[in-house]
Image (cartoon, rainbow, N blue to C red; front, top):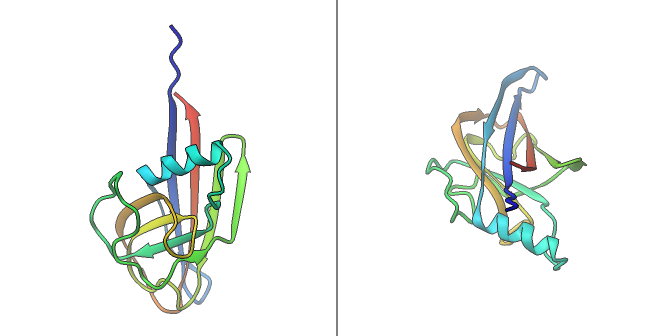
Length: 149
């Protein structure tokens, strides 16, 4: 009997930089690929017209990520457009910068989306607070890995 198992996993790296250019925090957390995310991946494989992942959001929600999530709990600002998406073998790395004045506050969650509003959420994660001041820059690198296990 042939058995094949695919695994989709993600990792979120947050780098908080002060106005002086010095790194204040550099942390990495795992994420949850939510149900709408797996449905999105399947639809893209069939060539449907779903838009590619294009935005990230940060928020202040603290409820643990669940498969049924469709958005962040307490968005801080608006969803920001992704700066770059790079594919290498079985990974996609999305990078988004929340510049001064964007996503300011006690950041405890993040989400990856295919639209500036509505759309599909691929992943969500929660983490210990990262305090982003108004003049700080928060750069998020979200790496999604698809592997056979």
